[in-house]
Amino acid sequence: MPMLLTAYNYKFLAIGVICVILGFGGMYIEGQQYGIYSLYIAPLLVLAGFVLVAFAVFKTDPRQVPDETGQDQKEEHPAG
Image (cartoon, rainbow, N blue to C red; front, side, top):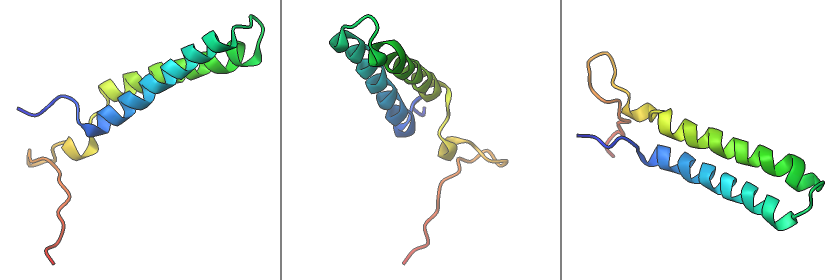
């Protein structure tokens, strides 16, 4: 049975989680109620992180999509 998530998905998942952590961390570190980073940039970074996490969960790896014959598409490298 193939794994549900591939390395392709885990890369996007990791980038999304890092964006969320940086966004919340930036809001905490700046600590100003009306700071430009904590009011505008950090929430957009958090939102982008959540979108990337959702993308990573729902997107399938293009190399794992079966073709018309039902076989997985794998890049074949010529020998030599």
